[in-house]
Image (cartoon, rainbow, N blue to C red; front, side, top):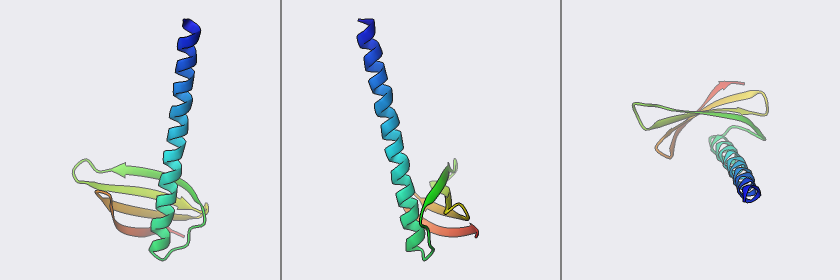
Length: 88
């Protein structure tokens, strides 16, 4: 019985890690698409840090592309508001 519970817990944690990895990949693809649609070049997204405002429905994603370019993508709800270049 303990082995079965251990197996179920292990399988649950593996599936949770796989789902988290897929979500990160989807976020990276979305950020890359938003940046390229705004007229900038982004071949590979290296990191994304997302911050949500407590007082409004605005979300800001700090994105690093190609290990050199830093972008700030702002959303209201799920709609993109702006893409700004922090540094190039």
